[in-house]
Amino acid sequence: MTFGGFNDKQTPAPMAEINVTPMVDVMLVLLVIFIMTAPLLTQAIKLDLPQATSASAPDNPATIQLAIDASGTLYWNDTAITTPELEQRFADAGKRTPQPELRLRADKSTRYEVIAQVMASAQSNGLSKLGFVTEPKPTGSPAR
Image 1 (tube, helix red, strand yellow):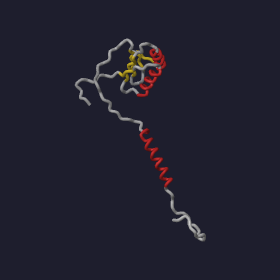
Image 2 (cartoon, one colour):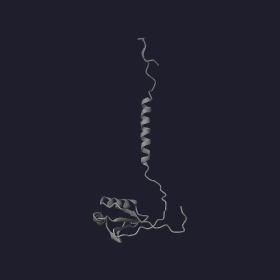
Image 3 (tube, helix red, strand yellow):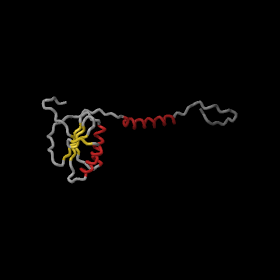
Image 4 (cartoon, helix red, strand yellow):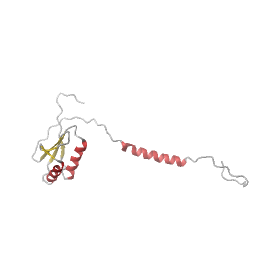
């Protein structure tokens, strides 16, 4: 189809073609956005964590044993405490030198949210030495 000519007596016919270039450009931009954001939308990651045996760490006087049972109850050196008491004890422990090590024992059915809040509270109060206490793997069990 030509858009110009030297004949003035002809009336131009309506343009019957659709320009798809802008539509293709928009679709490519949307495709790139989708490709970039799709990995961020996954919320669950399935993990099969390995089991390992190691020597138990010796207790020293600057060790704090913090246990969390399945219901979320906190135990500071085998004494039940509340969350505000935990904050205060973390603040006191964070000021000590040498800094005590926090050993966290959590029931395997404890909600991760509770554990994450305890870890964030410990870090915000200056406790950077954190260890997780696990049960040793039974001897004679097959390796996975």
